[in-house]
Picture 1: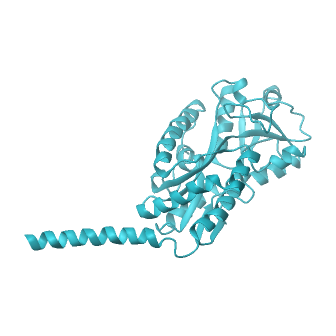
Picture 2: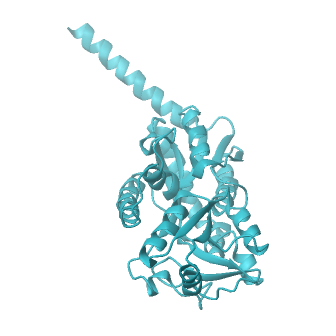
Picture 3: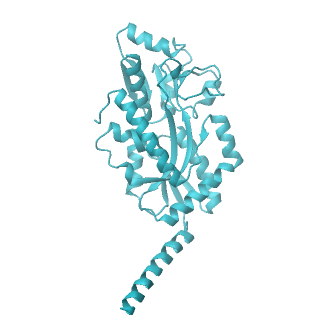
Length: 319
């Protein structure tokens, strides 16, 4: 009996020691951050900024790889296919973790396949038009579509924005046609070229275009007005229940060793005090979502409940 106990104790000690050693040795080679959207999107900007400083914190280079397609599903499938060792992360958020499962049946992944090692950012999004658009307000666009008995064409590039556009249509009793793009930059280009009526996108990637007058923001979806756009109204001014925030986090596979998750989480939490990252939040209009891996689990559950309410209001079922 003593021999069996000794063997079991030794095995447990070795297992714990191996797990600790794995975390202590990590990382021993470069890391990759997958961005499930095209270059120039808010997620892409955040991945490159955090990746740069994460490389400094961990002493290993970080490569950012854009894998757009299928509302972010292509990138998340790539993360699922990667080894669960912490060397491959994805910059994802509400679209891929809580909204895609509400819109699409066969994603090729499930939200439970991943965990967030740290939050990154949170913000309301914006309904945006080109500088030469006849629409000066959101109400102008909705009224034009209803008057002409047609759909309002809204460009989006992720599930969050697709759902948000559909929700606006339901609340305003307006037919909205989703025009899918691979990234915010592509939406912005078509808006500026006069090929698209309206876009619903995150604002961080188009701040310069708005300031230069090439794009015009007609409404924001946050709870409070954004100091970067002091004259822009909120959607909730017209539809009080309409509050929709986009958020991002750095994700790994759920079966990644806990010691590795902890090391990544600690390193990422330390980046929120970096001056360049603090400046990014000030200039982009995003709020820092500096939540730990454990805190992100509770946050994601709350966001899933909110998204379910949006989908129910818009009468959307998985397709």
